[in-house]
Length: 414
Ligand SMILES: *[C@@H]1O[C@H](CO)[C@@H](O)[C@H](O)[C@H]1NC(C)=O
Ligand SMILES: *[C@@H]1O[C@H](CO)[C@@H](O)[C@H](O)[C@H]1NC(C)=O
Ligand SMILES: *[C@@H]1O[C@H](CO)[C@@H](O)[C@H](O)[C@H]1NC(C)=O
Image 1 (tube, rainbow, N blue to C red):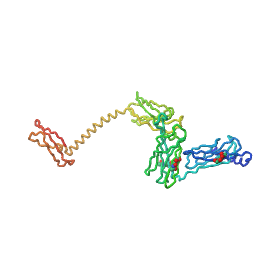
Image 2: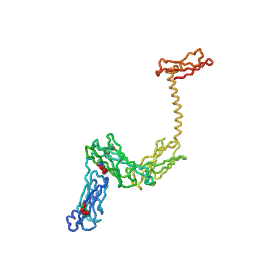
Image 3: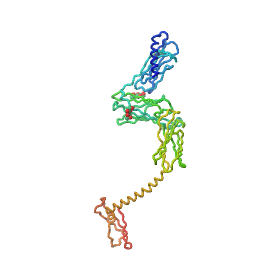
Image 4: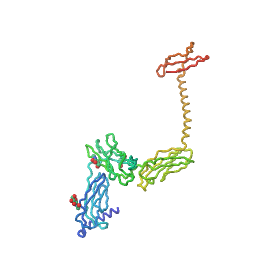
């Protein structure tokens, strides 16, 4: 508010000064002011000093009008701007006196880049990107690399034949996406770069540009800038180990797979008691923790990490590590088996005997065969059931053994 007012006053005073004493000290505007696109979401403003300007200590006052108002002073005759360009770009520059609070200033010179063609409804919507650190295949050159994943929605006014293309720029490197995911109409809606030129420790912004083509309409491109700390998904800590000793948990872990060194991380530790459902949360900057436990509960232990502020602006927490279960877990499991398995067996036997009784299966399976008078040992008997339960004829070989007046019967079915 205050700077704006000052600028307004400055401008008024400048105008007065220009009007009142133009012959005393005349500042001439710069010449050859141009705006050139030098990369995705990046322009270079350039101007030359006015050749007729008196040789005094000069500076330039730059004012960006589109897409976002901004202003600053510079001694140089060029200036780089990183900003989305899909709404075009417009700026003005004027000559001022160096580091003086003098209201003297030249008139403005302006230039602009026209917005690319296409209605805004044809642009992609809800563009989101995330980065993740992966191990590099060239470990000797650069141990870590960054992968990039972006997703978006098709513009609501985009024709059905629209195809989108995604590019990213980080510093001086620009790459086009090679691995797209498509929707039912075969339109690209997500992109995956397994490896990029992004330096996860860099402070520059990531520029993402999505343009498109269609036979029926001009597809307006879309630019978005991302700050790395805001979109980086930190890996979970590695090699989490838990040991129990004298009713204490000794928990340790290593820093996540990341280009950042050990001291850059903070951790959140979750010790979940599966018996009473209580979660203990600890915020830590060390990579070990000792916790007292009781000896009747099972615990699940998870850790997650975030890069902390001395190394980078604090971002969001990464993924939890896989849970590690410790404590009295095996005993209840064994007891459970000891009780349930015999019970199930008894139950099945009971049901089986009930069915047998109800359907007189027993008598059918073992029909009372009159004891033959002959002493033939093996006699194949074909038995035709009146109402076979599975519509099949069963052949039974019945072995008769005469032994001390008892009839021992063996039965086999085919
Ligand atoms: C402005 O541009 C023109 C054409 O490119 C060039 O001839 C001229 O020298 C430039 N003026 C100054 C002051 O550099
Ligand atoms: C897309 O973004 C808009 C505005 O930011 C939001 O209202 C909408 O819910 C988002 N749509 C989806 C599907 O995420
Ligand atoms: C999309 O942008 C890239 C990078 O600026 C450019 O090379 C390409 O020609 C553009 N494609 C379309 C269809 O506009």
